[in-house]
Length: 400
Image 1 (cartoon, rainbow, N blue to C red):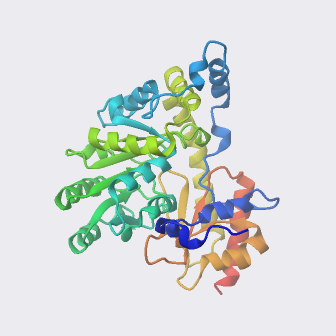
Image 2: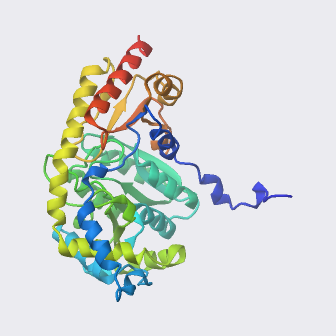
Image 3: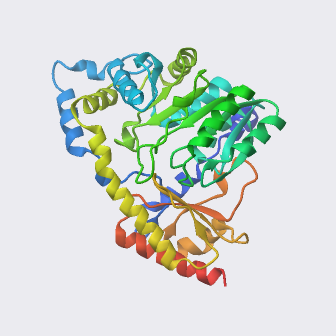
């Protein structure tokens, strides 16, 4: 019996590739494996008791509306509550400006669909969030990447790209505690990014899933808060501050953009699950989410500090890593001759039972093999230290 021939697939399907992270996470649950691969929040920090009570109250007789269809833009009550939090963060808005999405990931997908035609250029940080590339690729873009330093995206390099590159539609950034490097964009560069977007008539896509996981340093204004002409689309998520399984995020955009994103969402999935939106709204309305977030930070700060101290103690000279002031990741750079994907496959997994995410898939163009993203979230202290010790011993042997 014949199947569908490959020539029947749309051209965009050629750009749809498996996630490198998902491939590694398939190994993470095996006995004896220590995983620094996933960007999962620590499950011990989920507000289980509160959510249990909320769902019990929602799933009662006379409350069938919790299981009914609702507006494609999202439950109005939840949109209003999100708008209130965004307004408090320097982005004055109302419920009408907010679209509820299936996590931050859907915001990436919908924004690319709205703005990017095949052959248009998306500018990313170097390296950038792998999930964004997965979302963008079906739109068949070309990419240009801009280097980073401890102040985030190099806006001088960005200006050079914008001056010399045709068809740039979108500049994508994770300005707060970036995935994968953990770096935060400085205020001066946030302002310069908005200026450049104005000058060269491009859209800025600001992705902020880690914004509220800040352990030290100054809370900086969002890029959207510096936007005076409506060319910044701001994405956020409940995945890191409440629970990722709810699959709830949001997009904040000017009315024309928000309306078109909502139409694309209607075409994609009609709406988010009403029950989960009702639960999130009940949590925001009945509990102190700011207190909940503040209560999580000491745990994540401890995990970060333990990871960095372990790297310092056990990794050999010639290896460097970033020190994030928030988020879930450190970005490790190895000597240029080390192919981290091959080292993990041939040495790290079989001999140490340790998994990281090799850095190659985080590059939109000109990939570099001598990096890895390591997450410290949710790994028990003893396993974290032992995993880094084993990894360091094997790296010491490999780099002699």
